Amino acid sequence: MRKKVIAGNWKMYNDIPASVNLISELKKSLSGQEIKADVIICPPFTSLDTAKTLIEGSVIKLGAQNMYFEENGAYTGEISASMLKSAGCEFVILGHSERRTIFLENDQLINKKIKKALSSALKPIFCVGETLQQRESGTTESVIKTQVTEGLSGVSAEDLKKIIIAYEPVWAIGTGKTASPDQAQEVHKFIRTLVEKLYSKEAADEIIIQYGGSVKPENASLLLSQPDVDGALVGGACLKAESFFSIIKAA
Ligand code: PEP
Image 1 (cartoon, rainbow, N blue to C red):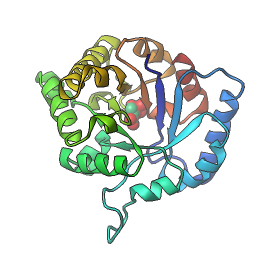
Image 2: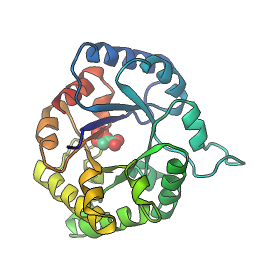
Image 3: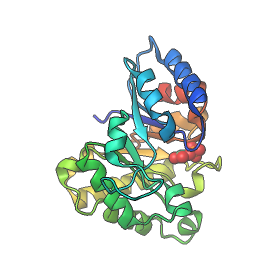
Image 4: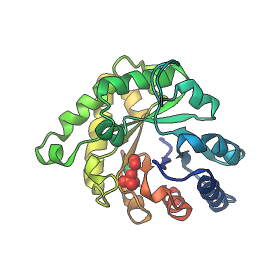
């Protein structure tokens, strides 16, 4: 059975003191609780090292929100996989829609990042999702198919085991609009079937597919109870320990 994975994407929120507060509060909520899900936080780069120290001995795991695919070099403003490893990261979010739309990342670049993360022992949380216009024009499945296929190009079956796919409809991110449990399930099932075609039934059964897009304490249980929804990638609601904890409890 697949274990649920709840990840919090802090985006560009929380300086170091605010990060210390949020992690301390989250640890307080989690302590003494029986937590059945995996819990990941993805703070900004500047808080990673502090977070690494604070989460020691807790169930919380650490991820980053982005990285570049080169090992090192003259890439001003970028950060490498090995830097993230040395800061204590186990995971890295790649292909988030904000990276795709604001920073113009395409499937080829995301694929290079995924392969570099894997070869550096970082586990990618690989985001895919359609825009509202794409959904309304009936191209959701073809958009998702291209993003998944291109993003995973050249990734071995063994490495696929280290990848989490996050289905995040762009129209639901930060908008308060959530995909209905049926809409989420439909696309998750589509992705799982696609993974079966690209790899195998075993790979499809094993892969964790998270839903992301305005997940809140009020809608988490229903979304997470769908058979192909294996967790959540949470933005806004992970910035308050109480609401992130409620989502973890729902899982
Ligand atoms: C996200 O940033 O991945 C996300 C899903 O954000 P929100 O939960 O705020 O929609």
